[in-house]
Length: 144
Image (cartoon, rainbow, N blue to C red; front, side, top):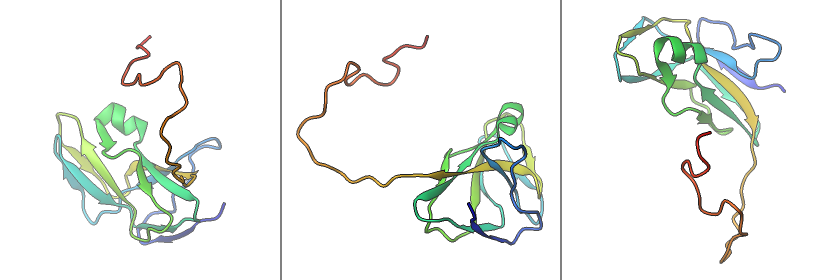
């Protein structure tokens, strides 16, 4: 699938790191390094602007290595970029570690997954079909 993109960063276009990768890495586009203190959050620009076809979204997700090794994750994961959004892709990073984290220009900070979605049409009813689970939620099926 082809997606129109404008790249105002000084980095190459996002690409898949392996043949079977679902996500494209997003890089920070910064004029200078940015310090993210413990429990601090910041919107980090990528310099990228995209035009998605209607019926698709782009999901901004954390990078597992950054989360596991440094405690840095995407706050609203997954963040959704709608097909009609034309602004710069920004990544809301949060530092969940006990140490300052320095975001460098060009650092891979998140991944982008392109996904098809459906649009819902509500059908107002008085009852729903019964199921074995019923109203059980929030761990009602156990942990093992």
